[in-house]
Structures are given as C-alpha cells and as structure tokens.
Amino acid sequence: AWAISTRRLPAICSLPTDAAPTVERCIDPACGRWQRSDLDTLLADTTRPLLFFIHGNRYSAAEAKSQGLALARHCRTRCPAGPTPRLVIFSWPSEQQGILLKDGRAKFARAHAEGHYLAWLLGRIDPERPVAIIGYSFGALITLEALDDLVAAGRAGRTDIQPWEGRPGRTHLVFIAAAVRCDALAPCGPYRDAASLMDRLTLVNNSRDDALQIGRAHV
Image (cartoon, rainbow, N blue to C red; front, side, top):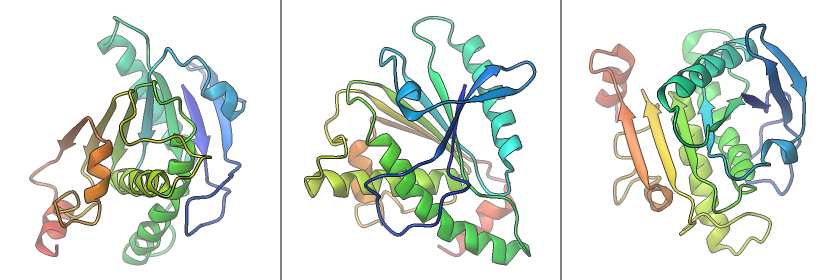
C-alpha cells in the first residue's frame, strides 16, 4: 500500500500546474512501517491497476493509513487472480476542528481544494492504466471535483494533464455514504460532465443513516 498526503499543503482554488504532496510506501504492513518515496515510483509499473481510497471527515493520518491497509488486505483475499491493484491512500487534512457544524462546513470547503490536488494526481496516470476510486463521505465529493477538473482541463487543451475523456483505461468508482447532492450527476446537476469519465459507478448507502436522511431532506 501507498499513501499520498496533502495534509501540509495549502488550500487552493484551481487545478495546479504542480504540487508537492508527501508520498510514502508501507514496507511492513504487520507493524505499520512506512518509508518516504516519490510520485514517479508510485506511478511506476503501469501493468498494475491503481485503487485509490479517499477517506471522509474526522480521520487522522494514522486512521487513514490503518483503514487503507485493511482495505488492501481485503483486496488481496477477494481478488487473488490477475494483477494485484496498487492501493493508494489519499490522505487529506480532515481532523476535527471545533464544533461539528463549523467543522463540517470547513471540511466541505476543503474538499473542493482537495479535488484540485486529486485531479493533478490523476492527470499524471498513464491513460491505459485502469483506475478505481473508493470515496467515503467527503471522499466522494473530492472525487467528483477532481473529475470535473479533468473534464475542464481536457477541453481547455492543457498539455500537462493526461486527457481523461475517452481514455482506454477503465475507471470504476465506488461511493460510500457520498456527501454529495442526490442530483449531482443529473443532466442539470453540478457534476453532469464528470459522468462522461466513469465506466461504472457503484453507490453504497445506508437508508437508516440519520445524516443522509437530513441531507436528502435539504437538497
């Protein structure tokens, strides 16, 4: 498993031309030992699919890594055939700050900035390489923001970003308790253009989740 962290990066308002996230590789999953690495090494070996795990709000860096390692173990037991996906934990600054309502609003704003960083990262992946993204809660919002950026970058002709519309590599998304509007991908929804970059989208929701019930009532 790998971890790419934006926890020390500033909030930004647009897709950057460059960024310097922290990259680490887990060298001993049993003991949770991590070693510094770099983005080129992370993106090497294009024969292996990339699986991104993007956590939600109120995760520390250690908690994000712990849950990511658990996901990696699950993938190894469930997908024994074929190339093993390279799991990448996208760790963003989501530790709780202040009261819940204020914290939630601040993380909603930060999720938009994180989408720009994620788009920058995705824009460096070989177009032939399959990509899967598991986004939990605000992780789903970050993913949609990133895809929206990639659509805009492609249509603007940016040469520093790999094109994602029509890329050969398949893109599968799994959103768990997604913190997004129920009409996000509708024909008039805010992320309608992002739908063109998805080969498959799976939604996992709990109909008894109080937060989701409140979210639906106010959409």
